[in-house]
Image (cartoon, rainbow, N blue to C red; front, side):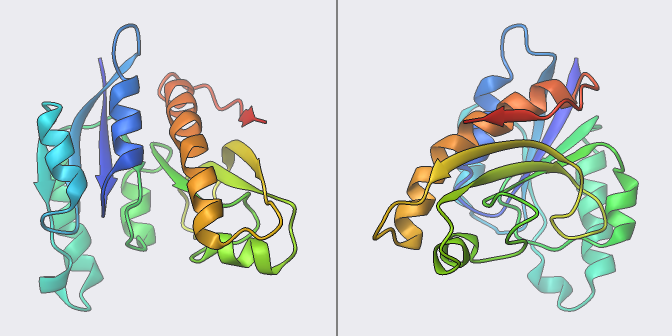
Length: 196
């Protein structure tokens, strides 16, 4: 059975969607949920689902990103995952970390990449006058939010939308898209998943 480690920083709603999808005839199972934030809400949810959890707090490492990532790799590799899924993991990773898991790591991003890499995606889409927003799942490479796009889901931007309105509309699509892409990814299928 293929093993998937999921990295989170917060409540873990995408982690829950991924973990719940990995049942029955799914080729993978979650082996670890790790957070860089002690007490992150998603850790308790993972534990309640019977998934091993770990925390590597980035704060004691201050500006030493290499030491933080060394501890991260040690904690992850102890669970021998075949793949990593970043699900709201709010740390920028260095090429050294990314190369360690090259070709085996996915991320979900709340915009229609290549538009709006980085933060504040919903506000930026509204300010630009876009009529469509959405989310993307991509393979993680050294370029921030720049790896090959393996799936996208679209939602309309409605007149008068705030970034919170848009985020609330995009999130359920994230919960559909990410599991669909992961299921293909773990068997080597890179065909993009496009949801309307």
